[in-house]
Image 1 (cartoon, one colour):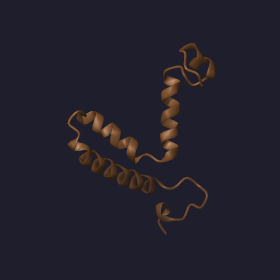
Image 2 (cartoon, one colour):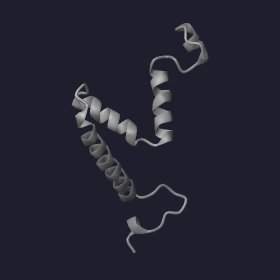
Image 3 (cartoon, rainbow, N blue to C red):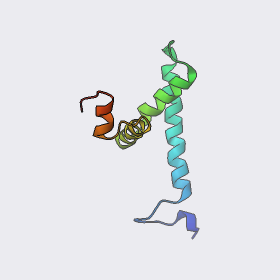
Length: 87
């Protein structure tokens, strides 16, 4: 039997599974970006970013939120207090 098609229970899935999943996600992002075409105030780049955020899973959205806070130095409470944010 072909190695790439055997079951990998409990292990990282083979590359073709990840590629298939990412191609489905890309198709969904493209469809969402196409649906967002009616928003005249968004550029093409902004539409694609917005579509990626809509297609993201809750965990991916949370990870992006945390990375945004880290990139602006607001991840820790002391960092937020320094800029006058109250949480």
